[in-house]
Image 1 (spheres, helix red, strand yellow):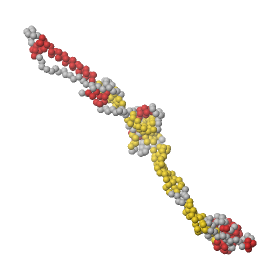
Image 2 (cartoon, helix red, strand yellow; image 1 turned 45 degrees about the horizontal axis):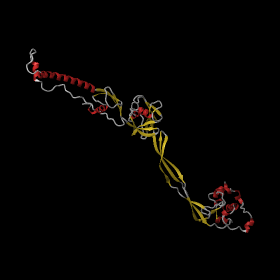
Image 3 (cartoon, helix red, strand yellow; image 1 turned 60 degrees about the vertical axis):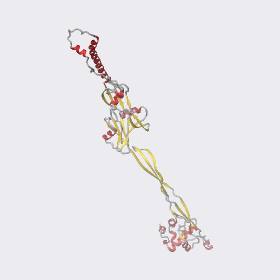
Image 4 (cartoon, helix red, strand yellow; image 1 turned 45 degrees about the vertical axis):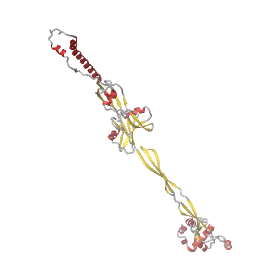
Length: 418
């Protein structure tokens, strides 16, 4: 019998009388109407003859009571479950009984407009709660709502916060939201700098994007918010994550080594120094082209520097002999001849960079014109050419030219004629 679960029940009754009919009554019903009373005790006979009439009256009362109870138990109510409204004919005596008879389950977060006794013509509204991921003033969190659409949820949440957006879940190339955008009215999609109109917002996010041909990349985000005019906006954010490498130099170190094959003070780079490479790799996230986050993936030296090695001479230099008295008395050395008209400065610049004290890395050649000691002595020089004055070096170079020509300087001799 409907209504047992909520404590309501109907009185059990029957319109059929039970038990044998008294014989006296049967006899009275069949005797002649003119016959007088029979002798003997009259009360019992009269009592038996009235009993069927009383029983019949009781039966009529029970029938009337049953019809009234039936009318009071039967109800027609409107049941609205998440916006789906149905007219329900029921014998339930309470809202709880109605929901049980319609297999409507209600959880602790769900809402029901009424509880307790159920009245005829009542409207019962049931709203099941839905979990939504939202950003409220920039903070992501999960909220439960009984709203039927995204715009209703946004309106409710927006009354308690400054900035609210619903976050659609992503699965492959689709975006899902458990609510339609709007029960009535329009919506719009903001994507790639364009605004695409949606005439009917009574659809899911995925359906709207499919209809507009919007393709989502795996990292793209989809938010639903209210625009300035109250229009529901689906915002597609293009998200790009890439690793960016930045390099910088690592300075090399330098060390010196003694070299007994070179004269003291002479230096030569035996191994050139090479800077190392330091590489920083960062994972950069951009949203619609604007950097949102940056995190370090790796940070370290990816190419070690090469140390510079400089060899420093330790060999003692020969002592220059003092010029003879005759040479000193003779005064400045003069070569004369054709050599005086040549470009000796150009030759010196090519051979030694114009340095009178220059010594080659091997220690074999000296001075402005890179004399060997033997050649220097061959033109009357004493000691080391690099220790003689620039004028003496030039004069003896002219003497060498007058004797042997420009071939004494195979690489730079041509500069004499420049």
